[in-house]
Image (cartoon, rainbow, N blue to C red; front, side, top):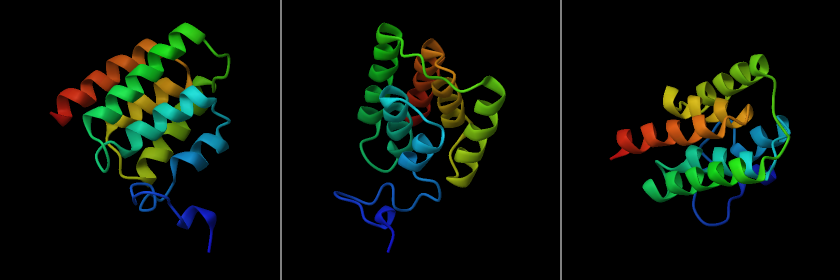
Amino acid sequence: MSILDKQIGGNHYKGLAYQPVVFATDTKMNFIQGSIVKYVSRFKNKNGREDLDKAKHFAKLGTTLNPYNFVRRSDAMEVSKDYCLKNNFSKEVESVVYSVLIQDWIGVVLNIDLLIKEYE
């Protein structure tokens, strides 16, 4: 049994083919980036709007703290598409993940706002 098969408190990650923690590790994301991907990956199966608000808050933290850890645009496009295809996530989630990888914090906020409108 893999450690990824165990989840404390729910099952919102266990059903994903490519879990956010593995994706964040594979792409060497920092804490802010990984947190945003985590929240947009689970919002439909856990806390809904609250998770989208948390992701947006982390994007705003990114604009303030400006950590220098990003993925090249060409790589970001490929890996964000792969992650979202494997997990059957929408193009809107893919846009958030892409923006996270390149640290386009304004893009993250705008794309999360689109998700919020779609969700409500």
